[in-house]
Amino acid sequence: MSKITVIIHTPQELNHSSYVQTGLFELAHAGLINVKVKLSLKKNSGTFSFDTKGNVLDENRPFPKASYYMLIDSTSNKKISFATDLYDSAVKFSKTGLEHCDFYFKRNFESFSVNIINKRFNNKVLPLGLTFRVQTSLLTSKVVIDKGVLFSNLWMNFKLDRFVFQRLKSCYDKTIKHIYDSKYNRDIKRFEAYEKEQISNVILFQTRTFLHEKDLDVKQIHQQRYRIIKLLRKEFPNRFLGGFVPSKISEELYGDALTNVPTAPEAYLDAVKKAGIVIYTRGLVNSPAWKMSEYLSQGKVIIAEPLTAELPVPLTEGKEVLYFHNDKELVEKIKLVSEDKALAEKLSVNARAYFEKHVHPVQNVKRILELMLNKPLD
Image 1 (tube, rainbow, N blue to C red):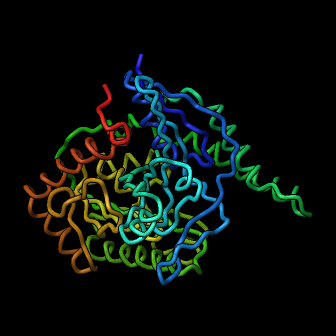
Image 2 (cartoon, rainbow, N blue to C red; image 1 turned 180 degrees about the vertical axis):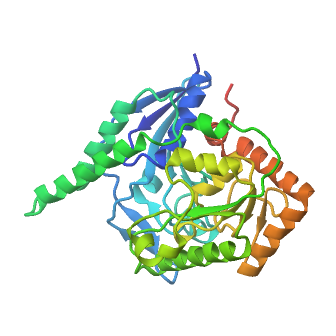
Image 3 (cartoon, rainbow, N blue to C red; image 1 turned 90 degrees about the vertical axis):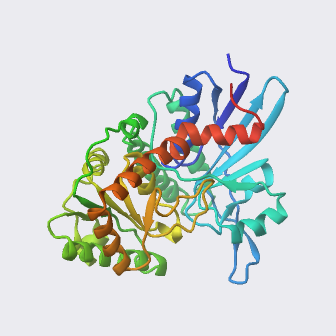
């Protein structure tokens, strides 16, 4: 029986938090830790953000993509509280996590904002690294977690006014759908499954649109992705697969760039597995998109827009990825790896090795726990 226990306080969302949960329950199955789930109905509201001058703002806004945990070492009776922040924005932080936790691991970690926050909170903010939407069949407390998600969201939206019933009904419907959809998160075994084959000639870039097209960041992302889809179809007509996933926005505004690849999560992962060269562009507000982790897991040859998020171990140009800064470079680097088979092979092997060592939820969560404990998990 392990002397290390991690208590999961039920989160307010399931797609991002599933990554940490997967790592914890897989570690528990390996006998390295014990995991318990505690029902939490706390609102955990409050957000620290920044204005254009870099001043910290204290806003009364929800922060659902932060999750909270307690790490207990029974040999020393040491208790360590920690939060994982998987929000897209690099300049927004959970007030609850910063004020009440000993450690705070941020997915979209950028030094400018983190350094300001760390001056106020004793350097507790650290990089979380790349994550992705995943689940494990070893999770044993799904019912409790789902209840926590539902009731905490209802409590978050409770306010006595004339819209209370309308608001709670809308929240209930959205949260139930969210819980239902989370059942289709892909199992970690699907990402572990990897058979090294000769690198195919297929170039893949399938992407999606977001709501709020009028938001400047969203509009810029859409236009960038649209331009790249059209470029790749023109330059590599017999090799390129992908496009926009059908949605109201993509069908109305980018109807000539819809994907020719299946969009269901399992079928899309199959398409990734069969591709040779894959293209990566940034997520919302420069956040690291899930597809980077998915690409690495399958040892793909990755041509990527540079990440602004700082990782615990950086992805290195020419080792795990090739970076592009404009359309011309994108086309040139696709042609380079198409012709230089040795380079393509090196990128593929190193991409998979990076996933196994730094992105797999077991390895990354283990790193986080050992960092806090200041000792290895036995």
